[in-house]
Length: 481
Image (cartoon, rainbow, N blue to C red; front, side, top):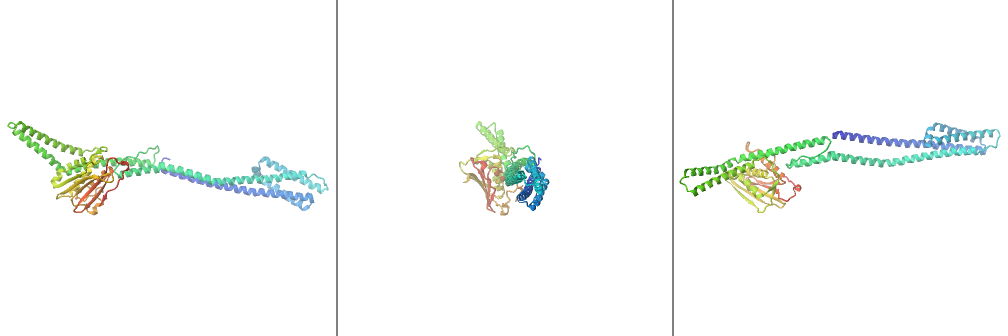
C-alpha cells in the first residue's frame, strides 16, 4: 500500500494476526502439555495394574491362593483392555517396533500364566516359571520406560514453554524497533522537516523542503503542497515589497519633484542667460555657465538614478553593506520631505562600525518606512534623530527617534500586524511596519519600540554585525514599551 493510512492499517492487521498467532500457539502448547499429563496418568495406571498383576501372580505361584488367582485374572484383563484402547497413543510414544514387542511379551506372559494355572489345577507341580517371570519383567520394564519417555517429553515441553515468553518478548522488541524506524522515516522525520520549514516561513524565509523518496503518500503530498505554498509566498512577498516601494515613492513624489525641479530651473535660467549674452560675454564667464549647466545636469541625473535603483524589483543576494552609507542613502530620499514639513534630522553614527550582511534595497525600504511614519507623525514640524552604535550582543543598534504624537498603548501590540493602521482611510495600508518586521527578521535581527503619547517614538533596530554565525542567530520578536 502506498498511503500511510494503508500502511498503518496493514501494520495493525499484522500485529493483530501476530498476537492472535501467539495466543493460539500458547493455548496449543498448553493443551498439548495437558494432554500429555493426562496420558502419563493413564500410563501410570497401566504400570500399577501390571505391578498388581505381578504381585497376584507371585502370591498364586508361591501360596496357591485362589483369591490372588481371581485378582490376577481381573488385572490382566484390565491391562489388555487398556493396551487395546490406547494402542495409538502407546505406539506414538514408544514406537511401532517396541509396542509390537510389548504386545508379544504381554500375550506370552498371559498364555504361559494360564497354562501354569491349568497344570496346577490338574495336579502338575513341575512347571518352569522362569518364562513367566521373564515375560512379566519385560512387560513391567516396558511400562516403566513408557512413563519415563512421557515424563521426558513433558519436561521438554515445559522447558520450551519457559523459553517462549523470552522469545515472544524478543520478537516484540524487534517489531517495535522496525515499526519505530518506519514511523520515523515515513512520518516523524518529514514532519520535523515541515515544522522546521514552517518556522522559517515565520522568519520570512520561504525555502522549499528537499525530501527525496520513491513513495508517494500523504506526507509527500503535504511537502509538495508546502513547497508550492512557499513558492507562492515568496512571489507574493517580492510583489508586496515592490508595491510598498512604489507606495513609498508615491509618498515622497512631491519632494523628488521639487529636488528635480531645482536643477532643471537652474539649467534653464543658465542656458537662457548664456543664449542672451553669448556674444558679449567673456570666455571665462561662458565656461563657468556651461560648468553650472553640467553640474545641475549631474545633480538631476543622480536624483533619477537613486529613484530608479530604489524602485527595482530584482532580489539581490546578501552582500556586505556599510552602515553609514546605507543610512545616508536612505536619508536622501526624504531630504526634501523634511524641508517641506520643517523637520530637523540629526545623525549620530559611531565611527568604525562593522559592516552588515544583507540586502541593501530591502534595508533601505525598511528604514524608509520608519522615517516616513515619523514624518507623518509630526505635521507641525519636529526633530528626527538617527543613532547607530555597536550593541553589547554583537549587534549594530540603529535608533530612529521622533518627537511626534507617539503611539497609543492600545495600538502598541498590533503595530506590526499586517493591514493594521491607525491612519485615516486612504492614507495607510497597514503594511509598512509589517514589511519592516519581516525584512529585519529575514536579516537575523529584531526590533524594539518605545513610545509615549505626545512625546515621541523610538524604533530600535538590531542587526547582526559581520562575523556572526548566521545559522546560530536567535531571532526574537518585536519588543514594545
